[in-house]
Amino acid sequence: MRDAEFDHLLHWVPDVGATAREYAAAGFPAHVNEPLSGFQNAGWRLDERYVEILTVVDEEAFATSPYAPAWELLRPAVAAAGGGGALTFAVNVPDAAATAQRLRGLGHRVVEAPVSFGDLGFLEVFAPGTPSWAPFFITYDPPREQLLAQAGPDAFDPGPHDLEALVVETADPARDARWLGELLDVPATGAEVPLPGARVVFEEGPAERITGVLVSGTGPDVVIGGLRFRHRTPTAKDLGS
Image 1 (tube, rainbow, N blue to C red):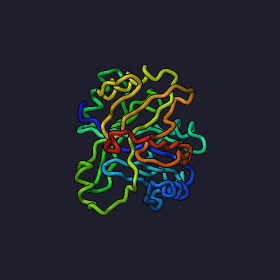
Image 2 (image 1 turned 120 degrees about the vertical axis):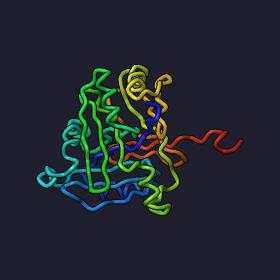
Image 3 (image 1 turned 90 degrees about the horizontal axis):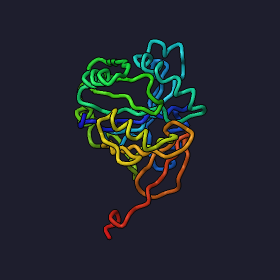
């Protein structure tokens, strides 16, 4: 699965609007969408990649949402996040159905969750029973590059930073990086998986979840909705030395 690429990070919070304002104040412009079918989200969009800030605002209305089946699989991660935090992340693949078959061949239980909004749809593939920080897989129809082109070059403002890495805290970083590398077919290097679009960095600790992100540029580290944003220190190469 060499065409696997980071797609988006799911950041659950109780109040999407308030969290989006914190994102913007920290230099990560986030666009807020109106609630729909009991669900509300916002996004810090970089290009095809983005961070999705999300919450359920009305459980009764959400029961009939296209997102409801997949959300049931994420409820344990939501409970573990407490007052807010990252749940999981999506990996874009050319054919999620083929990925589901590959995962079954590796012995994983697989759930396929199709979502359709008329001319736009996508297939999400989850592997229940894996660690809460493990990703799910997604394929868009039409492909995400086409969707972005249709939106136009001025459809979003990423701000001055880019998302470089996800930070996952586990008891055995090297072991868990190897496991994730095998799941993605992107071999790990030490305690890091070089997933295109945003690498995954494992650090030792008790959390057993995604605790932060690493972003480009300089600025103060900040915690927003239980997710820590850490700025990478520029190297001599970055500065043209």
